[in-house]
Length: 295
Image 1: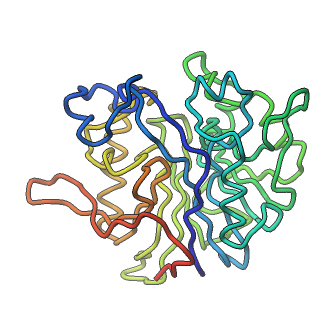
Image 2: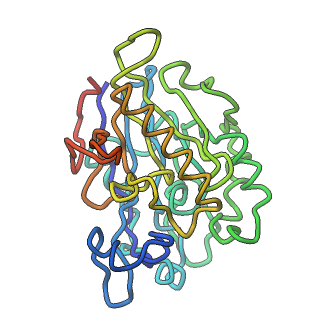
């Protein structure tokens, strides 16, 4: 099996919103803001093939579905569908993808499922041969969003996924589509039912898998958020997220599972570390993956 980091459309969002209650004097050392106080963010997907005999895409980024006014509001930097272009550069078309794993359905993680915006055209689902995996808890949130995060969802997307006949709701550690090759855990701090997908590593020690890769989604958007107290203003429950993140990182450190970051502009993959004071960090950082073996 090989892994590719697949670049999608990039964004610029308010740095204060991305770093929650951390003061600018702290976070601007990690991410330099522009004159509008915005920082650069990637929307990176992970491609694995063959995984359980299939070509699997973990998330799709923000895509190019926004009309120009909203594209401007949310800081989307490119008008073309960068994810599709990046898949092609890696040797794949969107029709080649057998499974799309969606941690959650916020537009910056699922918008790439849709064709680029065109005047007068209704939203159109891409990936015509893929099964779409969504966690059960988050699916309910997407169908009945709270006023606080309603704007984070694409109203038409749940209906399009249901109408495809290829939607699988995941309600446990494994899915029908991927079997035991991918293990799922769930988090509620950022959004209810956020689904964290771990590509199970090749080693087994005392009944535990070691050496895999986990898609961190918005539990840990990038290296700066590995520091446990750092959260986003977008998180629904920052204290819960901190507790979830600490347990998550302790587990990945113990099992040597690498972290894959969706929003870090410079780093796709890193190994978890912890210093003598107990603070988590990263090492062996990789900016991109090009047909990298899992082991």
